[in-house]
Each structure stands twice: as structure tokens, then as C-alpha cells.
Length: 587
Image (cartoon, rainbow, N blue to C red; front, side, top):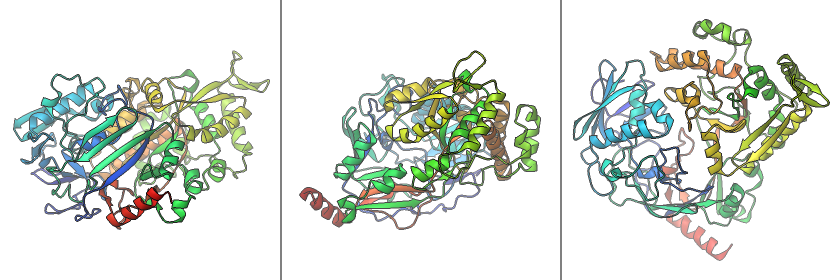
């Protein structure tokens, strides 16, 4: 971290881009501006406030806001001054100061001030989703030191990630929000300072953003070559199947595909065959995090890790990968998969030293055996895993009686798997059938996205399909993902309700890590504790981003670390004209 005013910060050392860089390396600085990008979304929206628990925010609404610093999508854990002109980490690491650019402007032409920054920080910390209180928990105070200078004083010098976390702060206009209740869903388009503003909308159906013609940051190194479309319109559909059909019909331009079945089988239509629609698998270099069925340990049924392990053991990934996913995925066996942070083999000496004080609270195998998930031949007849699962269940008092798995009181094991999209039913229903072989009465419930959000915000579920994304440098977000306090706050990210002393201690070690080696050891130790406590039935991951789009766009040829950087794409006028003509003729 720097101790004098600098243009950028990196958690992994010195930022790659020099102070005089002209644009991010993954953009075309001469990309033409113009045209329209039409996107699709599933569900509905009733609010323009994406920061609070209440309401369902509109897609793309974050595009109206700028942040103090912007990430380089081609560089791990590096941010560069954007609304801020410089950033200064204090020599004692007890604070950070941002000096704003004099030309930074909101959409009405008013200056972005330090007062706006301080008001935004206090409002998000005190009134927004719980994750913001967790992110900013180590900040003691925010101080306005002048119209363009704002400082954040920290409670300790331990959290080296905090300056970057504050650099991600979206700055809202304080005056515009006066007289408005920030805690309520917002039904009028807000004002921001970003490259787009809302011009048209119909709640639940569509939202249109237009590019700000005199956008203040268009020629900055952090803005050049980005936000190239004049219009970004998002159309809403009741489910993913209807959205896919709308894409095929040319009603939307771009689609990011997440279904391996659809990727393999749903794009064999005339427009693809004629080259009017392109498919691209954009390889990324990102940690893939954890996707899986999260078990709600707030429920008595899931309170015993042996029960959770048994339920995870029943899931036959190899059958699903072969029969449902066309062999496209790799099994996820770490919360930090696809990175050097993932725990592998036996714990290192550094990891053992961190975990030893909690040995009595951890499974013995954590220290003596590599973590493993069951593997099968993909036939669907996974008797070995089912036998091992049944032995685990018997050890906790569950037994099969009259082909039902019952406890000492004769009550059958039963739970619900909550889903937000019908597409996941094909994954969950075979799992239900495998559970039935053990006498478990599991069933699937699919609800619309708004109801799903309400239920998960209140932790009103048994098992839920969830995703936890991770970065190359874990930090404050781990408190929200796995911390005890986060698990009791409505609207938090701790879906499983994790509350374990070793987890709390490893998070503290991550936040206080003095160097990369210590961070890696603490993260791997955290990974082991989470894995061996079986909070999740792990699913799979993909090391590419699947996108399909009508052939009307161009993007830089250089691969980007994130795989997809849609903000750097632009309209190719010649291709767009040909595509529009073909779509208009129905060919």
C-alpha cells in the first residue's frame, strides 16, 4: 500500500499500470460510440434502489453511479482512481484519504463533493443491506477535510484491504436524496454521476438507460473505451425459457448462457447456421467460488455435520455431468476453486498451526486426510456412496424403517429444496430420487425471483441453490459469508447460517494477514473448516463464460482476465445493418 498520493492500489503488490496510463489494457480506446444494446432479464423489478433489502432493483441501474476507484478487469485486486484523483493510505495504515477530481459531476452538472462521499458512506453503513455494515465495520469515522478531500479513519491497522473496499464506494448525490426515505423502494429514477441515466421504464417489464452525452469521465484513463452504447435496454421475461425464445426471435441482442444443456442443444437454429448469431466461450482466470445446495443449519435437521455430509454424499455429480451437462463441468471441491487459495492434500504446517487451537471442535479427518467428494461411474447406480451416507445417518440416530428414514420418534426425514428458476429443477429432481432411495422425503419448490429473495432474506428455507463468489484476495466479505453475526441479520449473505469458532478465527487471520503467504495459509485453513463441516452439497464450475449474441457487435481481441467485459464492447455499424436487415425480413 502507498503512503503518498497515488493513482492506484493493489493488494498483490504494486499496480501494473503506471500513473500515466491512458486506458485499461482490455479496451479499444478508439471504440465508436453509438447504437443500442438490448439485454434480457428474468423476473420483475419494482425499485431503483439496489442497496437496500426491500424491493427488487432494476437491472443495470448501477450503471448510473460512479465509484471512487475503478477495477482493472485484466488485473487481480487492483483499483485505479476514478471519481478520486488520488488516494493516500496513511503511513500508520490507520486511515485513507481520497482527493476528488475537480471535474467530477453529477448528471445535473453539480460537483461531486466530499460531503456526498461522507453522506453515502454513512447512509449505506446505517440503512443499506447488512453486507455494508460488515464491509465498513472497521471504519471508525469519515471526515470531510475540504470540498474535494474526504478521509476515513480505521479502528486498527490490521485490515489492509479496507482502502480498496472504500475505493469501491458508489457515490450518491446527497442533495437529491434529501426528503426521500432511503430504506424504501425507490420508484423514480435517481440521479448519479455515471455514464448512463434512466430515461424510460415500465415496472416489471423494461428499463432503458441512455449514455450521458457530456459524461465527465469519458476521456479519463478509467473511462476511455468503455460505455460505448448510446442505449442499454433490458426487457424482462417470466422465465428463462421465454427469454431464450425472445433471443432467438431477435428481441434481445445478447445472452449469457448458464445452462450446459441449452449451450449444447438450444443454439441450433437458422440464425446460428447462417452466422447471424455467434457463440463464444470466453476463457477466464478467476476464482470460481462455491455453487451448491446450501443447508440451513438454523434448522434442527441440518445441525449435525454428519447428517450434512451424508446428504452431500448422495448427490451424484458424475451422473449429472454426463447426462445433463454434456460433460461440460468440473466438480467444485473448494470454496476457492480455480485459485492458489484452495485447500489441497493435507494441511500445511502453517495451516495446522492456525487450526490446532480448535482441534476439539473440528472433524479429526481434517488434520489427517485430504478432503474428498464421492465419485461414481456415472451410471446412476451409486450404491457405494449411498451405503456410506446411510452409515453416517445411522451414527446420528436415523434408521430405515418400512422404507422410510426415521428418527427415534419415528418421524421421517423430510425437507424442501427451494429454487428460483425452473431450469434448476432438472438438477434437483434426480437428487430427490437418490434421497428417496435412503427413505428421505425431499421435495422441490420453485418460486419467482421476488419471492425467492424474500424467503432467502428471512432465511425461511431448508435447502437452497446458492452461489458464493470469491476473489484472489479474500477480505471483509468473508465476515458476511460465514460470520456468526451475519447469519442472524435479515438480508445477509450467510445462507447456511455458519457459526463456528474456527471460522471466526480464520476470518480474523485473513483480515489481519501481514503478507500474501499468511493470507493464503489462513484462507486455505478457512476452506478446510468449511469443507469438513459440510455446509453445502457442492456442485460444479466452468472456467469460461458462455455468451451468445447477434452478430452486430465487436470487442477487443485480447482476452480479458474476467472472460467477459461487456462494457468494452461496441456496435459494429456494418454488421448491425446486415443483422437488422435479416431480422426485419424474418430470415
